[in-house]
Length: 325
Length: 293
Image 1 (cartoon, each protein chain N blue to C red):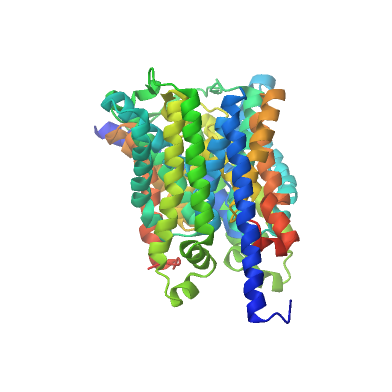
Image 2 (image 1 turned 90 degrees about the vertical axis):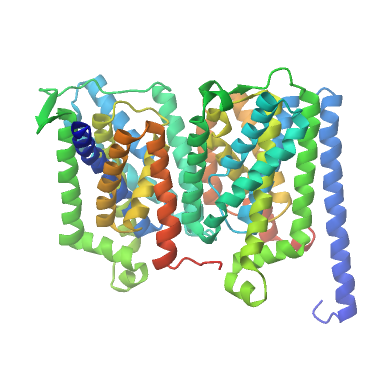
């Protein structure tokens, strides 16, 4: 390897790329076939719906934390605003549910633009401000007139429940999210984001427009949870501020993403699958201990596996970094 | 109206004192350890529950619960430090990871309190004699007056400790420069463990006061106090105990006066908005955060 000529190096890279994309296509294929079969074969619809939801949420969070280096601890704000956008548009404007989903995503983007000034903060300041902004969003929506948001009873979407259709819509959203992040990790934007995360000044010197790159990453990270909120509102048919802005949603998203490993496409997917499965297992056996174990799992994860499952494997076998999406 | 404003000021001082204690312990932790303790609110509520149990199971009044809470939480803090913090330093980004870890601790503690005490709001039915006092033209419950007095004593003691004793000076030195103090021969691990235990002990004391000052608490009240703590330490400047003290009192006054003029929910929004504004506009200037143009 040390004496590789330029042409053999190109061939080597092409080989690595081939493995990378084959692996991505293979994993993507397995995911599609698996989830597509769930309703057909009469699998556990709710479990798999939420599995896809958490994969999407954790992947979106990864764009912000893994690629751009921001830890938004108020991530639930996007989800909640998306959920309420869908509910209000269906209930008060009478739009068809499917048409409201892009608008829920749009609401997430608008919120992200409003929060964009916080991107100049870093580290713990960003995390605290993000937390406070999510609390503000919840308080604002809770205190809106009852005729709009339904007050403390929330909004019922009425006779719009279509579990199987919303399941497949969630699947499409998840695949779009995974595709976007796969593209992002290989794209100019993704590389620029990582460069800015690692050393903003050096990236600036290389001619990267730091503010623009950060904003673009932030918008991608905000879009998907908002759509997730909309789809979940449709699936459960009810939205209220207590559940739509529950900080546990942020907690689970963060924990699942970190469990898998930030910064790779597969990390949050692996983390979400492992943890949702574990969560379900615990929930069935010890419903009361669920929350306690979730908290303890987080502590143990940070202490013993801070790089997550995929991150630890990659640290152990750095050569695989080129092949693993 | 005048009475309402005066009432707001008195209550603001009482509540602000509690916030100041929360802020002082949080800022000590952050200053010495660079750990952002998201679980601080749960530790405080843990102190409230301890006072609740001591009173309802053993008949021990809250005033006697204070030393019990302080000592037991101090000891728990020591244990928690050695279980949690030393390993944390090995991760790539200890500060963010500390936030995440304490987030986990906060969930676990809230769940534990939920298991032990269920989701109902609790309050201690202890009453002082007389129930309320007249200060100038306003009536204040004796519990609140007592709480204020305790706050003043405790914060004075902490201040005295930090500025007049050698271990206290070592703590302040560690906040200023963690590397230099090790060169001076201070065992930073022991000092950090002490800081953690001190902060937890203060949280326990604060918890007893919360049970005296606020009408009720439950297993999920924690995050509210954590967030108020963050607001206070950011307002007072991270790692500055005296700043936290002043900011806590100021925040309590603003909050209580805001409830006089604004609806309750709006007053809360004002608090969070204040935090965001302070971080965005004040710190951007003099603390030189990396500004992405």
